[in-house]
Image (cartoon, rainbow, N blue to C red):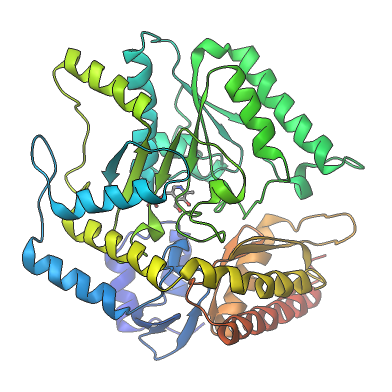
Length: 459
Ligand code: PLP
């Protein structure tokens, strides 16, 4: 163990890091990033890494894009802040809302801006409640989410999240939140069950839940097209069609959480298009500004919007909004990011890279540590297992996933361990050669992890 640098000491003495085993940080210290360029980031020790996770699934245009920097500078000079509360507005917010309406996967009438994905999902819940109050259905308030979903960390978004780590220690989930099955066929499919049977069972389980709770008590279901932080779970074919049929039967709206999957990540503008979802409303964030500034968005159709108009007239006002929702700097960067996705044909580029991404992940499935690889567009994951035949997992306490990601990082690639699944979500601007280099580093780290597992006798 090398002693902490001065800066690392200052770091642990002053920062409360999100998602960190804080009891360990005093000995391991944080990797302090100093600058980024293209798909690379560099730490204060001068080491370079391929940012194979686009930071937190968000820096789709990589780092240091000159056009983004110019757009930010111009907006800072013109109007660094203004709000859109009441009867105030600003050009970037309107322009971005117009652009989102143009590219939305379903007809959208209005866009509500937040500062983050969590706030977008929190807002979705409030809007569903508001809508049902407006429609005179005050009991139709429960929200269905899924086991292993990730929707953020505000009290409601963390409640929607279906991961024990986001509930334990926080007295969550709150009332009115229900969790249904996770469409993870590799893990939850039973012996001999086909994908189609698994989908039918998952849909039946949803129907049973709705009938048990009472359809008149349920407002909405929220779902990520591809589950990200739950372990990159790509639902089997026909999943959303089956789910959607059950929801439609009971007048329950589907909210798509496109916070990771929006803006080209899956090869289309939206994961909803790739996975054949027909959501009523959509949450977006992350690649909305390519992570050059914080921003989230909720997109709603005309009929839902009309219910807000009527209800706010009765109540006197639509009393919901964040100081920085619609921030001109963030919105100007959102406008520029979408313009770049369009003029540089980033979606086309993603589609060109997809066969290589798939081929390299499929090859990884042969690795002795890897039980399954999953992918959709340019987001993927490799689930590490103790026994490939029986799919037996390692004991989480052994920390195989985190150790593998540490070794991959030592080889100059940043990937993320979600338990024992190693996630990969490179900037969408990555070239073929760079993508091959990223996978070479990934494989090298996995080889070292396999050697460590064998040496320690962890099987
Ligand atoms: N929804 C999804 C699918 C996410 O992956 C995330 C963050 O990773 C969020 C919501 C929360 O977004 P934020 O961290 O911006 O609040």
